[in-house]
Amino acid sequence: MREEKDLALVLHELSKLYENGFQALSGINLKVESGDFFALLGPNGAGKSTTIGIICSLIRKTGGVVKIFGHDTDINFSSAKKLIGIVPQEFNFNQFEKPIDILVTQAGYYGISRSVALERAQKYLTLLGLWDKRAVSSRALSGGMKRRLMIARALIHNPKLLILDEPTAGVDIELRRSMWEFLQDINEAGTTIILTTHYLEEAENLCRNVAIINHGRIVQNTSVKSLVRQLQVQTFSVDLKDKLLQVPLVGDYQIRKVDDHVIEVDVLRNQTINPLITGLSDQSIEVVSMSHKTNRLEELFLKIIETNESK
Amino acid sequence: MNRYEIWIAFMTIVIREVRRFLRIWPQTIIPPVVTMALFFLIFGNVIGSRIGFMQGLPYSQFVAPGLIMLSVITNSYGNVVSSFYGSKFQRNIEELMVSPTPNIIILSGYIVGGMARGLLVGLIVSLVSLFFTEFSVFSPVIAFAIILLTSMMFSVAGFLNAIYADSFDDISVIPNFVLTPLVYLGGVFYSTSLLSEFWANVSLINPILYMVNTFRFGFSGVTDIDIFWAFTMVTLFTLVLFLISLKLLRDSPRLRT
Ligand SMILES: Nc1ncnc2c1ncn2[C@@H]1O[C@H](COP(=O)(O)OP(=O)(O)O)[C@@H](O)[C@H]1O
Ligand SMILES: [Mg+2]
Image (tube, each protein chain N blue to C red):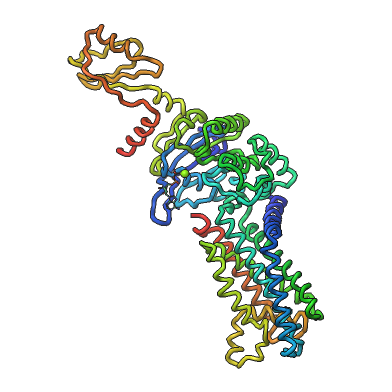
């Protein structure tokens, strides 16, 4: 068991009942290790923004504990807040101000002097391709630029934990890639990153660990690798004419017996199914029909959520 | 945050507030100055010369302190209510709410910003009034102390209004329907000794009456009311409003759902 201060984030039984009586979160438990690149994945309305809002104290929780690198946000809010940088889902800066002023002002709220703030602002605006735009009214920035401005703002106090709420929603593919690269660099330099997304692809490309949230509950918490492993396997359900005596061995396919007339076969993405059919024929096993169980990422995503709902 | 960091955070808010109202000076500085110049022209010179003396002062000298006070009150209040409501509306208040800046510093920063505008406009209006009247200063300390306190009190009041406001209409209701009548009925234009006993007594529940009279006392040394009581009351009001604002800043579902 790791020390708590090695954990960038601990959520313990986090719950949120909105004033209108809607239970948005019901007992979220989550641990994110220091240095991790973590995805909080879930469909719209799952409770991602509510969770993020509570972590950075924009939303009041109705139960549970939040700890940032060991600092309880209820007890040690000042230390906890200094460690977090937040990029919210919606634009929340003064559109009439210039990017450079937005950054320097934000630094001031963290007690960072103007001279240090100016240096950092230059660094992050340059890295994010906004230096040329530093003195225009931020209203005039494109959507992608506004998003990057919020990333620069979130980094201005050098937080150890960067949280991004759907950072690439509505950002075009090319920009998305460059934003991903930027985030990977930041993560490699030591910043723990948590991002929420409803694109599996984003989690797959960027993140090491993932929690899937739905209806205010964590329904799966695993490494992205193992999630992707589940995803890269297509499962076929094969109906057989005759009663099966024993599970046949064909190539290196994973075959399971479901009942006397049905087997399930896992086929990796890079495998074809021709050898499966010929292999079965060679053993005089006749196939009546074959159906595809799951393959696409989104489908599996839905499956995970559905199985949890039926529990 | 250590003290130095807190100081930086505080000054960041104050400077941002001052820059905001200076940037939009045609909306923040010019209108009150024009209005006050008109008031001086009409009540001080045109009509004032027919009224003669009030409380033993030439009428133009009598109204000057009240008009200065009026501009300080409306500008302190107006600055905080529109700035804080504006940052709620654009959601950039979240920039402060996620930061480690303590609530008391956030509140104080907005208040000092409001006071800066109130006092700046008050100063300009005072200078303008010198074109229309002359006045001696009886006690600069009392005059300055009461204007400072008043400006502080209405800055906090503006903050409270902004927390409760859900629309731009909500930030003009109080100034138009509460503040302005209270100021006009608070002895800016007349001495309560002119009123019947009943209305004079009713006037006594208007806190602005005390501020205006104390401020005028600072210039002329003449007053309808007890100066000490005036200071006590303004201080208490300010303190209570400050504590309520602090509590709302921490707990209000209007800021954190
Ligand atoms: N202020 C609010 N009052 C009531 N319900 C809310 C409020 N904000 C969000 N919700 C509800 O809580 C649920 C979770 O919302 P949210 O956390 O924004 O989801 P996500 O970010 O995963 O899309 C949604 O059903 C949403 O309608
Ligand atoms: Mg969301």
